[in-house]
Length: 335
Image (cartoon, helix red, strand yellow):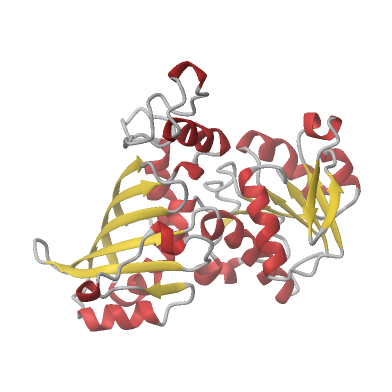
């Protein structure tokens, strides 16, 4: 399998390489792609112990890979993903560029990979905070019918990128203010910012509205009532979410636990007596979505509270993309 990785030198790109190695994806030729500046500088990345020089976008297209995984920005994807598709490459895109395009599939393999066909040449990977939530919610939606979601996210600095990680580390080391390159308007160390991505005309952020629109598309239900508040927190890696769910049908807690314990990609960690609950530290480096603090909300009919945690660079980005590639290969959906 000839595989191109666009954005190979970036934060998610490096995790993508790690996941491809760990899951032993059958790569016969690895083509790392990066910016022209990285190509000119002769940058290299390592895959399975071997150093590869990064290549230009056009060079990668000329190689006609079966799969191209994009881990670059939306503008890059809009420009170049169609060019890969023209030569028969199947693109799995991690940006927001194609997610809400009605002609493109938005896929979480545990939920809706069965919608994919050989004709799908650009496949969208959902937002990290959306992925972890819908993995947990999908079996509950199937059983009880989700009616309304109230979501509060607590998102780590790696969700913003390497510049944010550097700001966090510099502030933690008490670097003088003028020497810190800022990814955020304010300090992030010892602080929480109710501001993920840009603000929109409705006063919600783009990140909050991704949770609304992407969840509806993945679960195939535009009637879902959803509201969200996304907060950036001083955590290096791992996103956490407090999710309040109102169902159309009533439920029993033991049934909820059973559904989650048997759900693909979910680990239930919920024993308050022994202080066991999901945390970013425990989720780090793992591919599962961890669910705990499972309890009935007595303030509203048929309502439930969940605490959902996942490694945002793995299941929230790299692992989900590689799982899509695995499904395509297994089901003979590649050129």
